Length: 196
View 1: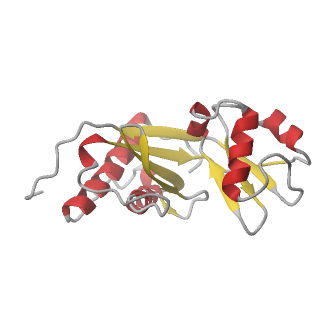
View 2: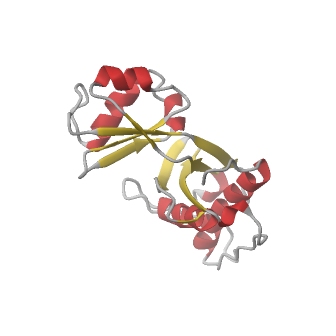
View 3: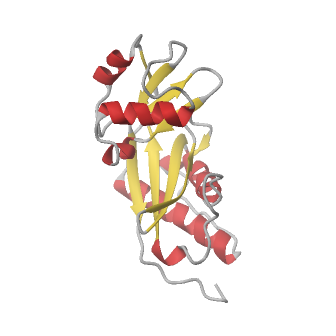
């Protein structure tokens, strides 16, 4: 998705992600109705992050546009409920579940031959970062800067996440930066009852 989303579109995406989670937990069918001319029909890339009281419950996404943005968000919300790194999201999580949708801009290659060059190119709080060597790939969303505010820590943690040594620059790795716009659907929520 190249054009910026309106706040209304972004809120709709966040509600859509939360609705997908709720429908799955309640065993309901999700019905999506969007205006024909909605920007959400354009292909886009997104991440959906689920947190309960500040604790990560799932984060899954796509880095390149592959399907209409509204479908990408629903798909990633459902996949985030079963993030393989964490226990599955349950109905007990629902009342305190914070649902965040990050709509990604297109990644741009960062020409870099060294760790120092990459650290200089990074803009804390603004850049998401993808590292890849053709076999492995790892990314941090721009929101991760709130937990790792120093570029050195940010890069070391991402290298570690990708399975590379955190303290040196692997020459086979390429770097890509991207921006993201975040939208939230925040708790509290009505607990799911037996008839939900």
